[in-house]
Structures are given as structure tokens and as C-alpha cells.
Amino acid sequence: MVLDVNSPLPNESINQLAPWTSYNSGYLNRTFAILDAFRQYPNTLGFFASNEVINDLSNDFNAPYIRAVTRDLKEYMAARGGRQIPVGYSAADVRPILVDTANYVSCSISGVQNDGKADFFGLNSYSWCNGDNFQTSTYNVLADDFANTTIPVFFSEFGE
Image (cartoon, rainbow, N blue to C red):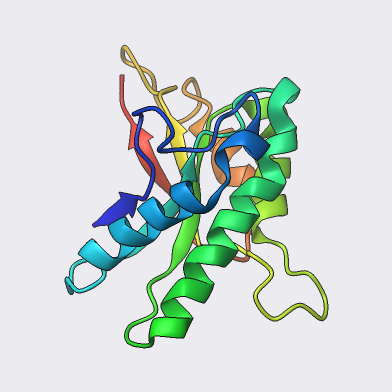
């Protein structure tokens, strides 16, 4: 299981329009509680620090908040010991910014131990519909775009 630590309820996720208003101790404590509740289970494969926080060109300013939540979840786990579970990001299939988003969340910052780098990248894609195939769905483009990634990439949502 890969679990999102966020919720669609008010104040339980990063506010896409003003992330600085939602990234606070109350929000973080809630994400830590989700992590604590599920990290004990052996079938917990990973946690999504965020889901579709960047969903068009106008809100790319959310990117540092994705890395900050990732960093904070990793630091929280490290401070408590035990099994360290991977933390990643689940992205909307917005092609003009998709590869840049993946590159940003997966790059390392030189000299910084826990720099908020994602351990994996989930993609929410609904482009294979109504009899499409690998080419007409443009999955071939996605395969090419992610052929040389440095972290695992998988479909976190898919379908029609």
C-alpha cells in the first residue's frame, strides 16, 4: 500500500493557491499521525507527501512545499527509528510541466543530507481510454519521458 498523508478535508493538505498558509505545525502533526498509524504495517510500501499540488503552470510555486513535506516526513521517521518507509509525490498528468516536476522532486541538492528528494514518483494518468493503445494514449511518450529517471515511476492513478 502507498498512502497519501493528505486529505481532501479543509486544512488537511497543502493549499494550492497559498501553500504558505497551510504548511504549519497543525498540518505537519496530522501528517505525522497518519504516518505513525500506518508505518507499523508490513504492507505499507510508501507515503505520498503530496498529490497533484502542482496541476498547471500557474501553481508551480508549490514545488518547494512538496520537498519540504517529503523532508519533514523523512526526518520524523529517522528521529523515531524503526523501518524507514519511502516518501514520494503523486503528480497530475500535465504534460507541459510533468517532466520538470519529476526532475525537481527527484534531484539531489549537493551538500544537504535530507534535501527532500522524493524516493518515487507517482503519475495520475487517464489518457488510455475508449479503445486507445500504447501510441494513441500517448503512453509511449510517457515511457520515453521517464526512460532515464533516477527514482521509480509508476501509475498512482489510471484508467478511464
